[in-house]
Amino acid sequence: FLLHSSASFLAKFAQMTEQLRKPAGIATFCGWDGKPLRVPEEEYRARLAAVRARADPDFDLIVVIRPEDVYYLTGFYTIGDASPQSVIIPKLGDPFMVARLIEVDLVRKLTWIEKVWTCPDHEPIHSTFCEAVGQALPGKGVVGIQLDATYASQYSRVCEFLGKFPQITIRDASKVVESVRLGKSRYERECIQKAAQMSEIGMKAGLELIRKGALLSDLHVASYSAMIKAGSEVPGYMPIVRASDPSGHGSWMVGEAVEEGGLVFLEMSACVHGHHSPLMRTAYVMRPDEAGLPDWLVEAEKLIQETFEACLPKMVPGAKASDIDRIGRQIMTGNSHGLAMKARLAYSTGSTATQPDGHAGWGDADFSLVGSNHETLRENMVFHFIPWFQKYSSTVTGPIGMSDAVIVTPDGGKRLGSMPLTIVLVKSDDMELLGQSSKRRKGEK
Image (cartoon, rainbow, N blue to C red):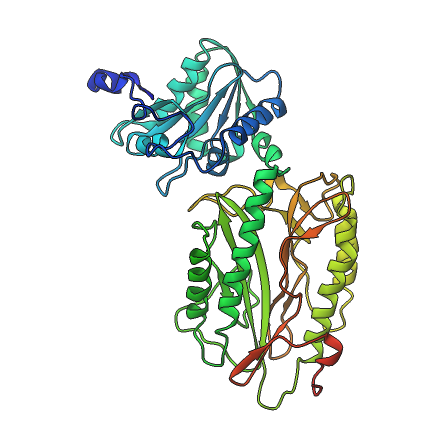
């Protein structure tokens, strides 16, 4: 395990240039405990090969800065400051990393990388980063950098440093790794399927606690605890629990409780080796004078179900994303109760995300089922299919969502979850999932 340091660091800490290897007998693709890394060696090699094949052939060096992509390629993640820690991929030869000295043990523990440039926190990591890039390109070449993941200050430093070398050119490589992540390998699909089961376990645990007066924070705790006990890692985002509040992605507030005649919305995404499977469900807590779902909620449930039924068969390789969005949007916006559909119909998901910087793969490579995306679907893409409403009118407001992770196959989109696509109706002190919408209208049993 080879450590490099910046010139100033070398002068003060020359001993850090010595070779530091994993303990004797520990293979490259094992952690320092001797156990294989969580992601198999062949999977890492395939990912690296795919990134090199996807990159511009003129690139002599690809600088990967986005934490999710660094995790995807190496297994490295940290709760510390991610910038400008990175993995640098030369056209030929092995990748290496730039990392803070305090993080070097994580590189050795979590990754297969055997060379890292580093410095302690009182030395400028940005300078170490620049020198690492410069050393890999002695005087000339094309550097591909993830510019959309680069801070302006960091980019300014890189430009200033590389500007000393007229034959070095910087180009954008922002979407190279994300584009590879769009298609899921067999290993990744297995991880996402496991995560889907864990998401449902967490969802059921939260739904079971819904009662008048129950704290939304308790629902959050129950959902998160159940997911972790089921085997989930720390996910890219915590379980979202909301009541009659239509605002964006807001979650519970301290002391906020379930109320009669209101909605309770839950969204969560368990995580297996960084791969996620998001899930939404909605409950309605009846008032004493109600015998079933109100008409506007019956219609919402029906339209969401119809959107799944109409769109999933269209989710085949070669289908245009905007065409599928149009089909689903026509169904959803045809409601008669003024329910708003403001979000995209689906976004690519399942890919690696990290805490605290990750967002569960919310739209890898900007690929969503939305009217502005005229690109075509590929086999084994995975989407979070989210036909959901926001209700702003009348006395009851809030989100209405039922979603699932869906994989693209030649036979159409296949749901990875198994929970019914129905609104959970909470009656008095008990909860039950009732039958079809036609039997659940207000005043019917």
